[in-house]
Image 1 (cartoon, rainbow, N blue to C red):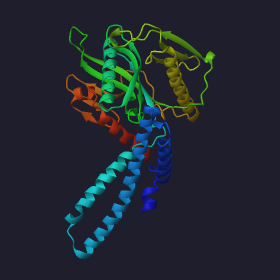
Image 2 (cartoon, rainbow, N blue to C red):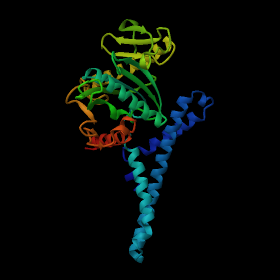
Image 3 (cartoon, helix red, strand yellow):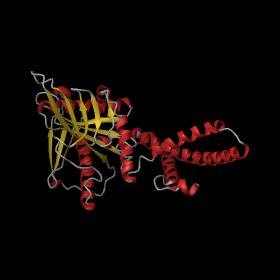
Image 4 (spheres, rainbow, N blue to C red):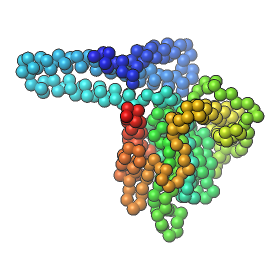
Length: 355
């Protein structure tokens, strides 16, 4: 039973124990809590692995006990209700382990950067992009997930053209990968004096933030650096100096920006870190010739490309096109309650690996 259950590839039981030992050694080092953000991430990872190991061990023991109890029942004519508690306990353990099995990709545990870009739909699309930014920041705040807006570009009339959020924490990437794709909104436009129904689009990209990335070296002549004045929501200046940084990689055309810090040097460092991550992912995609492996299809935000639709008129519904999950309370979703979409996406992703 142990060989069958614990050595299945999705759990890698022995390596999990080795990983836990390494994390505990790290936790016990002097000065570990000097970097609070890093310490919290490592502690959560260690706690998660320890919980999985405990659950797997408990499940193995409980299966053995249940097997013995069933055999005893057959011999002594004991009622099935007498071991119902054991069955319920097993069901709960299996559910916990199934949840853990949803995380298997090598990037799952990493920090992430989520970027929103307004698509087709004019001022309505800019407003829709800002609604998505609000949805994600509310979701992150309500779940006590550390995050910071890295860059934001205001729309001319309303809303935003684009925004980037850096998310820090264990499994930040895995728990937001579900949002990558085009999001479609159908509503009566607040910007249309004739109160007509409009369809707007916004594209969302999510990438893992690969730390200690020594594989990519960027030379000064490979990039163009522009500095500009940081601005927040409503056009309010974060500070009065040109501290925001935009970096363009000339060869690939990739562009990153950061205005989260008050220092131009700090913003440049964070932007370069993000650019190196994007270049590394692109390199691996090109080498493997699997453009969908990490980032999925990158399409223009327009008709027929959406992963999720949010309909406010003529009825109310949010529907995910990948797994057909539907929610009737659109306002709750727009207020940040997207957990069901995240969970069902992880299940859908896992099923795709198994098929």
